[in-house]
Image (cartoon, rainbow over all chains, first blue to last red; front, side, top):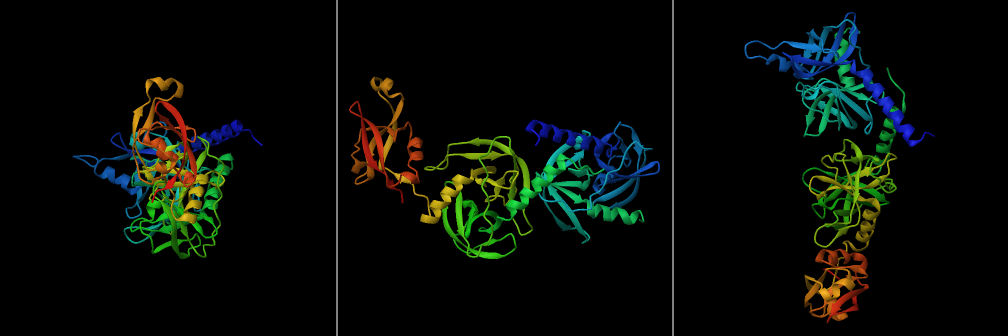
Length: 210
Length: 298
């Protein structure tokens, strides 16, 4: 039986280790130096990384400039900017897939195939208000499905993690460090909504012809 | 990169705790808008918040296994925001009560606001406070505060510990928009009175009083600066029958100092109704103890 202090110390160590590992898979998306959202690295593909984010983060780029369309770039964990190619975009599901040549500067995250349980611990990592690598903690509040604009069923996850503008597109991680959702929006000021990893994976995989 | 660590164990235990309390949480349909939550605590009884039961009949609950059952209002107490519903065929395991809450302990707020299942939010026990005045003539001896978010429909739900046992009944009706948790032992005590009588008895004495300063000559000996000066005594009321007269200054009730009207109202709780209490008064400059049998307020 561990003592209370040892147990909390072990938990702290586990959480810090988990988040340190995950940070290499979370990037900031910027338009002309202004942070517009977060990207979650799905996997590496040769010299490139495939990154998932919300479609509405790209929309911020579409209207970023008065005289020219703002150009979306990605900043890796060391603040280096990279050109971004939009491979695919689905406004109804609010998902987009990006390709970025980063030559091993980032790593991918594992997407959980299981529906998380209500009460499970979750961590959100993102760039709220442009501040990078911010971690918030909460629990799964409820899971369910909603209809997208075009009628498709979307699995969603509600949680009490604190999100703010700029978190969009970032991962919601479980206690094992697996992605259980992509943070997408805030409802009623205090309920955070993520698109479930299962829905994201279903959307990603046909694209990759696996 | 799945890590099986203490964090995953803790996380799984929190989810287990939600599963445990979920078996005892029902949806309460008692108002037009948002449905609320109730806690099954006995074979056919459900504890909920008074303010979510806006009508006296046509009440239903939905059990964790999806059965919609009619519910009768067994009793309600607006000042503590507790109501009890009697549900024939409830057949839902009663919630376990947690040990007393400690500030800093992990906690989950859990409700069943719809048939889509339970909803949870997380936090800690933020404070254990009390006694606090609730309305004009009720007192909550103890209450718990939490930083867990009370989502719509959480009133009547539970704040639970890491084992899934209930610290108490959660309500946002006592302090508007803030989650206040009525400890389980207090909620069950009120519920016991409600199932017996349908309401919580409030005592009364039949006096009109006014706060006044204790005369300087007596202040040192009495160790209190204020008392309640009796300015009117109701005819045939409990106070008159006991022998209280206009001009008496109430100083204490059953040995507890009375320095303002709230002190007195807080002590005239259901427990004292019908019982003789010892009222210490200052009469003609001399302390005197008078026995008064507390009456029941209608």
